[in-house]
Length: 307
Image 1 (cartoon, rainbow, N blue to C red):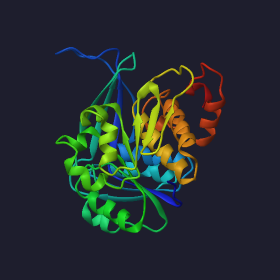
Image 2 (cartoon, rainbow, N blue to C red):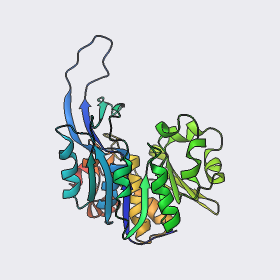
Image 3 (cartoon, one colour):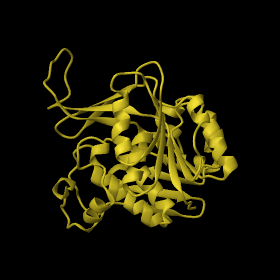
Image 4 (cartoon, helix red, strand yellow):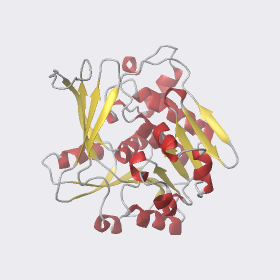
């Protein structure tokens, strides 16, 4: 299914800090580290930027805390051409600390704070004019009202099925999964669902599932067909943070443009692969021009050589 118009992203925003270290510390061991990256993050915010870089018109609805750095998170998103609806609430903005060792292995630390999902006041004032697709991650029950609007307005929606959003099982998410155009699942989410995870999601009324499979690429499954996409080559992997978010945002952008599922999935996989060649999430996402060069580059190319 395709749609026309703007992609609206509603969900989480964070301050992401990437720390590069030689190894993971042992108990009571002190290590010197380098802060290699500090920028806006969050699975939905990341996907919004990827979607914008892919060429789509993008809106983003988020709420930060009242920290000193909170407003600074929104400025680069607006500078990228995203129409940001931002609010503030008392408390700390979500912080994500990415611990990255010399081999590229990472550990994630998350303080959720108050910015995992906008509140009812901000959501009730959303501008839905021209919206042709909604993407969200259900970190709050408030997502139900947003998706209910989409259901009544005939707007397709997609969900990033983060493992943290269904720790008690899928049952609480049935109202938002039923009718979803696409659900994006990484390998941890698929394992958490249990046996036959894709079949279970389709049985709940999900129209299609995109499984992100790390170096194996991604698979799209709906009732009628399935499509696989994989990067051809062996790119250098520096940091995989946010690669799945990049894939989701790129896929949404290209589907909004009317590209077929196989072609949109292939481009999304290549965009996510490109992002793994740089440090951090948003700073490593490609533009359309960069992705074209990446797709046409000879084997052995790494993203860093094409900046």
